[in-house]
Length: 247
Image 1 (tube, rainbow, N blue to C red):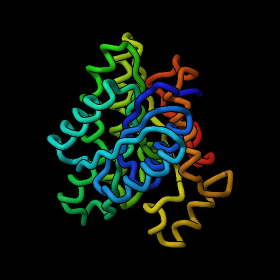
Image 2: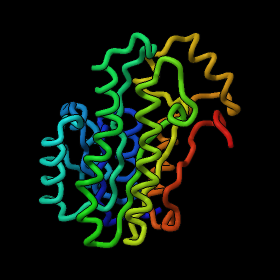
Image 3: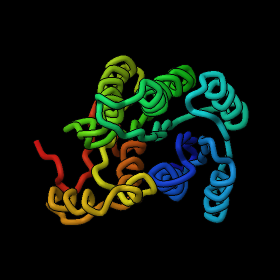
């Protein structure tokens, strides 16, 4: 899975799965543009990538802001001349039962998790069409496939990403541009660290492998989908959940 010469953009790359994806893509030879709100954390990730003797660009942006997204991608193309790989990973949670969920919490999660993926994808289509090569990878979730009480906004956004993935795959497939998704289950990140121990224990009982996953295990799958080895795969959702959801 050699990505030498490829240029990747990873959103939400300041921590967790996004950080792991950015570092894994760099390890396999890609230059990486890091997009997230927290510039300090992005600088830390860029330093790790630079230590691998690979090129990283810190690109701070509020992924909910369309103008900031456009400016970020314009700057990336100006510096690198192209974008080969887009990983739409940025995501947040605002958990609450539907009957108590505030509209602002619904909007924040849908805007960050789903609308940002649509906006970022729009920015890379033109350069990918010109080079007749591209990889778009959306990070969805097992809860976008099976639902989760208290996460109607999150589950809806992640289910929407699956639909978006398939639509883009059909629109762009004839131009040698693939679009796939990875659907992580319980992964050890800052997002899952805040969950109650009782919930974590009940989750473990649902996982045949008997453990939570590591961000790197998701990143390996993203790197595969970004590679030439995955050239005949598009519109696919790759489950990375320890067997939590089958079928």
